Length: 139
Image 1 (cartoon, rainbow, N blue to C red):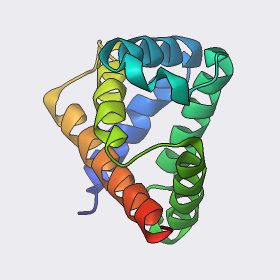
Image 2 (cartoon, rainbow, N blue to C red):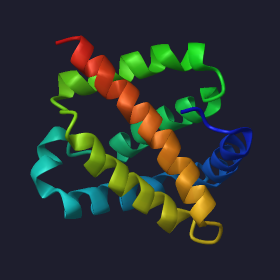
Image 3 (cartoon, helix red, strand yellow):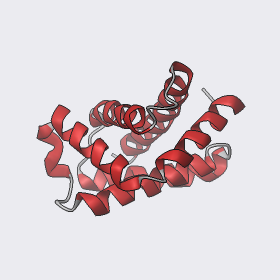
Image 4 (cartoon, rainbow, N blue to C red):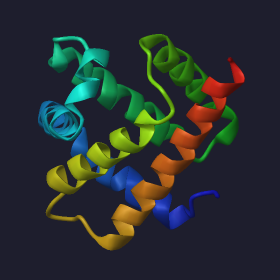
């Protein structure tokens, strides 16, 4: 399932607003993620500020390349390898996605809409499924 041009535009425009407040986005994400899934806190370093910057940087790379499938494959492969080394299991992707969409809704409250939510959900589903396939292929 590929994203439409309109979905890509909505994602790019909204992400442009998120990256103007990376610390806030990271804080909202990790607070909500750990609230929902405290059992997964062991996967993360104690310095969540640095971790927040890594999260924002990874999503930024994917957002900037989302219309170039051949370029994004390598990034997805690398992300999958790193996350597998960290101990991430495919089952954790749903938890991450839930917290990620919550974060977007909070940070983008002024522009959040059902179409924007659906676009981000589609993008997250595509990336997370590709990462899970990569992780399973390496087993």
